[in-house]
Amino acid sequence: MAVGMIDPRRANTPFYIGVSTDTKPKPSNPNAGPRFYEWDTGIWFIYTGGEEGKWVEFHEPDDGSIPADSTSTEVAYLQDIHLELVRIRRLLEISNELDSDDLDLAP
Image (tube, rainbow, N blue to C red; front, side, top):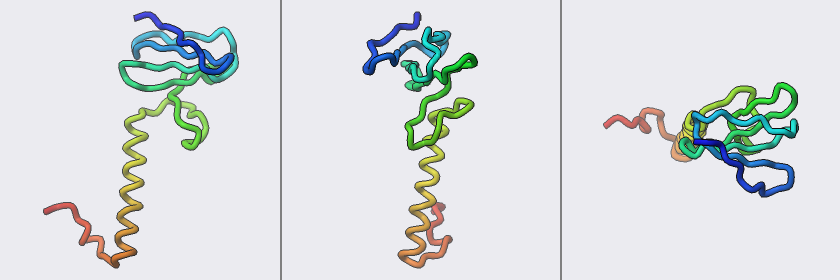
């Protein structure tokens, strides 16, 4: 499939769409910010800008800065789920004064 450009929602921010096997374009504007959506994987990428600009997986701002290397969205979600389960377990242990053995998932 050929890479297509989506009408930008904000001025000077190009949005591209394609499949994961497509070669991502090098934007004519060297600034950071263009986005690329892989519709077959559902992953967004952002262009880092500059002379050495590259496409890295996009994360929401509260996830921190743009990572140097791409991280699988699936891995990031699983890590978030794991942390939330640890928090829930701690809350249950504190509020009910449970032993960690009481929370064993095995039958």
